[in-house]
Image (cartoon, rainbow, N blue to C red; front, side):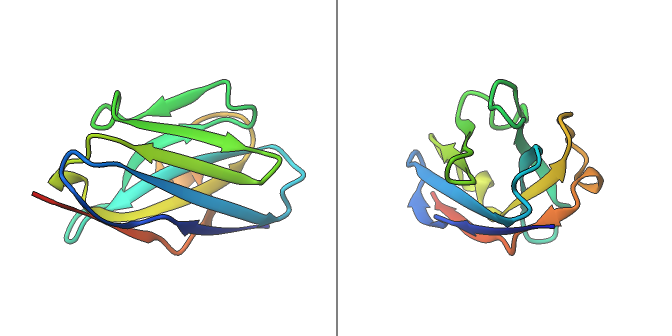
Amino acid sequence: QVQLVESGGGLVQAGGSLRLSCAASGRTDSRYVMGWFRQAPGKEREFVAAINWSGSSTDPADSVKGRFTISRDNAKNTVYLQMNSLKPEDTAVYYCAARYGSNLYRDRMNYAYWGQGTQVTVSS
């Protein structure tokens, strides 16, 4: 199993930046895909971005493409989400997720392990 802990959320003005981190522990010796999802109040949890084990392949959602960048440092068992040009509609709880394997998926049902989430609030 993999345990995930997010950090880095907070309050930021529109146009600002934040970097989220997700530290993995437990069975991290096997290759696993990491993803970021978010959930705004009253809305479904939605896909934000995913990255494969080596970091050579990423898949950002259209809504964040060009603004958010997902990356990982396997030596630190950590995945990052750099968020630039933030908008009020980016306000949500952000979750990281993991699944063993190499394929990138946007459907949250494909991810077995989840963090507890970190709140991101963007003021206008």
